[in-house]
Amino acid sequence: WVQTLQLATKINILHHFHCLILTKITVTVTVTRTGALVRPVVSFSPNWATIAKNDSITLTCTVGPTAPLSQRYSWYRDNRRINGEERSFIIGKAEEKDSGNYQCQAGTSERSDPVRLSVTNDRVILQAPPSVYEGDPLTLRCYSPYTKAVHVTFYKDNVTISSSPTDSLTLGASVGMAGTYRCKAFKLTEFNYSSPYTSADTAITIQELFPRPQIRADKDGVQGGDVLTLSCHTALNPARGATQLQFAFYRNGHNVQGFSSSSNYTIQSARPQDSGNYTCDTAAPSVSVTKGSPGLSIHIHGEYNVPGGTLRDRRYTIENTIRLALAVCILLSGSLLSYCHINRELN
Image (cartoon, rainbow, N blue to C red; front, side, top):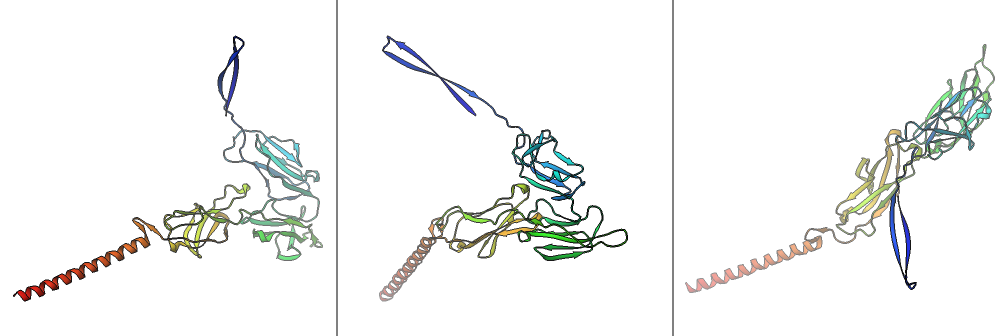
């Protein structure tokens, strides 16, 4: 950052004329920002959004790899600062008053997005992760704080999705799995099973890992011989910024560039046969999520340019050369026949 300071001095001459002398002093100031440069993320361990009274849970503030190792952390519940300056915030014996939206701040970073923690005294609790993204394993647990839950039934939007002797269910998360979940379970007592208990409803949302990609061309009105670059545009959810994406391109449904880390496909010299409907796929192989773009119609206008002119120019040149060669052959043939005829008459 450069700041220029101007100092002005007036010198009066005979009280009639004056000149303005400008002195420029250039001051260079280097500003260094300490702390995390990205928004941190709050995670839970164990990874449940709802826990029972007296359970323990650890909240961790995760920042990017470039953040300083030694820095002060700040914790907030429902936008109010709470005690804690370490990367991890531990609730050793949860009470219902510990329920709330938790955020953290690392150094001078922005605050994290809020993550909801609920503490309940219910007899049976449906536990699910606080944040679920496409492709994640979605684990549900029908939890009884003091005795084991058995013969568990899980429901989504009032429809049975699983009946199991165990208290857990793991599914592969997709956006279509968002909904209202609950569970019903028997509690194992000393001598027998209890009457069934049903948990409270839990709304589960599945966050997009990345939106559907869009395919774009770097120019309109593509002419033959032009360099054309198509790009596949999408954006990772910031909370999953470390996920690796790969891209593939298709023309009329046929693959023209396989999956790679490049989001661009370049045609170095466009030809009429390169015209067609182009699409691209974006994939996150680590979580088996793939999405395709809408189509983009590309039409190559005009003739295909080659060294020495267009194909039409080259075709005309070849045709004219052939015509000239034929004309020369005919002329030579006629001359040869005339020579032979004259020579025969002379003999």
